[in-house]
Length: 440
Image (cartoon, rainbow, N blue to C red):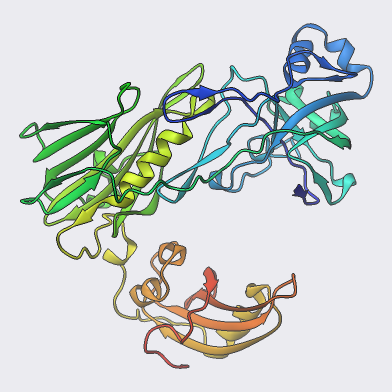
C-alpha cells in the first residue's frame, strides 16, 4: 500500500521490464480496452484524443498501476498557475513501470517515454491521508478547472476515490546482486587491478588507443557492453569548476568501485521512442591513473534491470592491489577547509537550541557539541552527510537524543553551518562523539 500525504500527487506509468537479454511482458496487465465498466489507461488516453466529450461528462473509472514519483529526481516545485508539480507526481499505467532504478547502490530516475500510455494522478488535499494500492480501480475525473493551467492538464486524472485494490505484479526496485566469487577474472598485474565478469561473456582488450588499456565485456548475444578503461593521469574537478569530459553528466553521486570511493556519472543522451540513450560511469583515481567502468543502455520502457544488476555486481568485484584512499575525483574532502575560518560563529548554546528544533525529535536533549573545520565534519560519519553543500568556515556537530514521531528512540548528529546556523545535514549519530572533539 502506498501512503499518500495531504498533498496533490501525480502518477505516470509505463510498461516493460527486462531480464539480462530480453524484455518480459507482464501477464496480468490490463488490456487496452474497457475492464468491466472501467477503462484501462491506454483506452482512457485514446478517448482523450478521440472522445473528449465522453470523458468530460462525468466520473471515470480506471484500472491502473500506480507508480510513485522517484525520490532520486529530487523535490519538484509547483508551477505558476498550477497547484501541483506534474513531474513530481505519481503515474498511472497498464503495466508496472520502474520510475527509478539502482546502479552501484545509487538510485537514478527513469522517465516515462511518450510512447507509453500514461496519466498523472492528482490526489486533492480534500481527500486527506489515504492508502492507494500499487494496482487499483480508481474513480475520478478529467478537465478539473483548478488544474487547467498545469502543463499536460488533459493527462491529469483527479482522484475522487479508490474503489478497490486489483491484483497485479509488484516491481522490484533493487534486485539482489549475484555472487561473483566463481566468475572468471580479468586482471592486469602491472596496473594492479582486476574485475570479475559472468561466465560465458567475451572479453576484448585494446591498448595504446589513448588509454593504457580498454576492456569490453559482452554477453553471448552481444546485446550489452560493459567497458573498463584506464587512462594516464588523475582526474579532478578542473579549473574554476569546469568538469572534464569524463565527469560531465546529468547528475553525479558518490558510489563504490570495489572498495574504492568513486563518482557515479549519469549521462543522458538522445531520446528514442522507447526511452533515452544513457551511460553510467564509475570514475576513480588509482596509482596516478583514471579508472572508468561504464555501461551503455536505453532507459524508459526499454530499461533492462538485469543488465544493470550485472553491472553493479561487476563494479563490486573490482579489486586493487593497494589500499585506495580518496579515489573519488569529486570527493568534497579534497577541497574542504582543514582549519576553522575567522567567523564569527554562533555560540554553543545557540547551536544546541537550533539543532533541537531542526532535528524533528520529541523530548529532545543535546548530549554533545563540537565546533569543527569543514573537512572534519565531512569525515565525521560515513555516508551522505559527507556531501553536504557549500564550504562553510566551520561546522557545529550537535548530537541530539529523543523520540521520533513514530515513537522510536533516536540519536542523531545534526550538522549546522557555524556562521549562519543553517542545517547542512542530519544523520544517525555514531556510537561515540565524532572525532576526538568534546563539547565546545
